[in-house]
Length: 375
Image 1 (cartoon, rainbow, N blue to C red):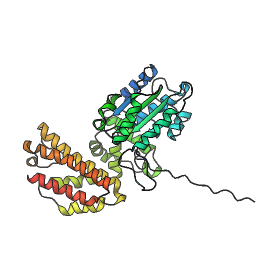
Image 2 (cartoon, rainbow, N blue to C red):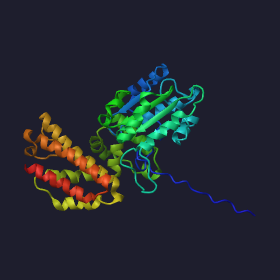
Image 3 (spheres, one colour):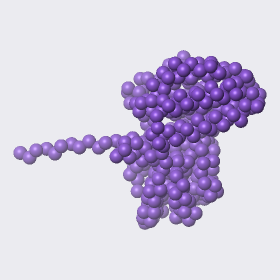
Image 4 (cartoon, one colour):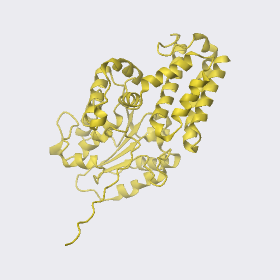
């Protein structure tokens, strides 16, 4: 008797644009809080005067990619599968299943791809990713068939990749739509921004945020779904999330409330630094297993600095969640602290690009905070 062939499992590669434990934006069915933006896109497509390029911009984690994939499904679906008044396409529709699997012949997604050799994501989207456009756009499409190119996140294109994309945007083939998703439109080439229409999305309001977070947990695995925030934590999580679903999910999954309290305690002690607490944070966040908490730490820290600078610039005093003494940031020191914020972001990017020591970076950041507060 012939031996049954072994079943080979297909490895599911990590995706840079997916939060661990939760569905990818293309698997998220409902979009909350962006009804006007969705209506504008649906009406533009239905009118037959759809612009070939759209820049979907706004803060991170508010539903930009979800909107892009909803529009992609709607465009690529058979007309009989499209809803009349929304961008909805039934999950069982052929186009919806193909978009979910990234197997639709009319869809190309350009993003940072997982490197199976280094087991890391590249720091930028390389030009080779964009060069796939040539073959994709060169294929003959069927009668009345559309093609959709999703670039997520567009600000991560390196210089060569951005210039390569620009060439396609300058001479787009018929019935081709480019959807550029970005949280930092100012980092894109001016020439790219001039060839697309910008659709700005705002942070979610409280109700839309709650519904989107509830959906994310409901569509996650059983282990993750059971860890949804308790009501007593919701107000603080929502405040820190600032209208971002991704940020709230990250905060809760990485015990962000406790991390925020530890950062605030150190900042509140300035100009004196509790170096024991800083070393403890550096030890906890230096390993690769702490990637999510490490990223969240810098989001919370840079966010706190930005709030302090903005509040002082507006003459509003200090925000309630970071009660740093007003003497630390006065009108004469705004430039120093604003420069510090930029330096922290730049040093973090360099540490990631060169694979430098994370704890050394954290110690250096607080050393700079100490020096700035004593100036």
